[in-house]
Amino acid sequence: MTKTDLLERLANSAVDVDRCGKWPHEQIDWLNEAGVMKSVIPAEYGGNELDSEAMTHEYHDLAKACLTTCFILTQRNGACQRIASSPFPEVREALLPSLVSGQHFATVGISHLTTSRQYLKTPPVQVEMSNDEVTLNGQIPWVTGASAADWIVTGGTCSDGQQVLVAVPANHEGVEVQPFVQLMALTASETTSVKLENVTVPRSLLIAGPTESVLSSGSGGAGSVTTSTLALGVISRMVEVIEDQSSRREELVETAELLKGEYSVLKKDLFALVSPSDRDQPANATAEIRRRCNSLVLRMTQAALTMTKGAGYVKGHPVELAIREAMFFLVWSCPANVAQGVLNELTCREVSFS
Image 1 (cartoon, rainbow, N blue to C red):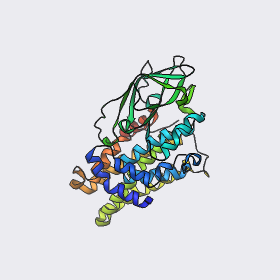
Image 2: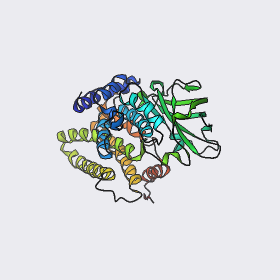
Image 3: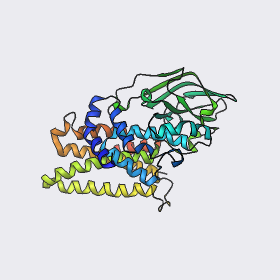
Image 4: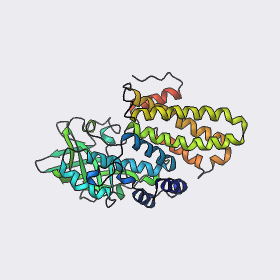
């Protein structure tokens, strides 16, 4: 299957995926058929690893076609990237060949190490280490596709405050996948929490650590650039809606041109962050791009609804879907400074990133 065929199929089925609200087996198979599952895995393990710029283009196009499927892919890719960047060859060699072939599916549950539940005094997942084993106890708050996964890449905190990342078999004794929750959008991603009760795995499944701030080393995960890219994909989808509406109603042309111009500048600035020829970026550039993407995806979807009027308010309409999807970016991988930027804009306060 070509990438063009893949994008067309995903776009044509996106509303049905949302309406059904169940794991999109067929769409995941399409990703595998089109070779997308190889995009983050090194060639030595059978992959076809893309550089950051090419991967960003791929995420943009996939999110434009179907945000749910693309979001699932980011979580699977995040798991694969963490494994691929592990300094321990045992875990790379044990897992990557079956992941690149599509024989096995991996996902990631690490938000509790970054933005989720940081207010708790006791770490959400506690870890005990021995020479041969790693034991985990606690609750992973957000895991996409846990019921479909063979492996969950997760982490926890040791008694001395150091952290680890480890690959946990999803069917392992003590792993309890909770029923997935009904979300405002992306319910079909079957995102849920996972309980870990005395889950002991061999140390050969250790991916990183023990170390302080384990996620600061290696690569992988959604990250703010990827999150911004997915928002940009939804924006791009709505650009086509406002173009269509403005082509039929002259009074909409000026508004449509302003929004399209903002999208073009934002897309250029986002891709500059991942371009190998443009690495001289200010320290706050990634957070600022995220704020701008959040702002525009909210405004663009509402503009599309205003233009499509009652038709866009009907459940199952592409604009209605996009409005609900836009809300996702207010909660997914949204650190405090980005959230504050949203609140500043909503209350018409000056936005500042330092």
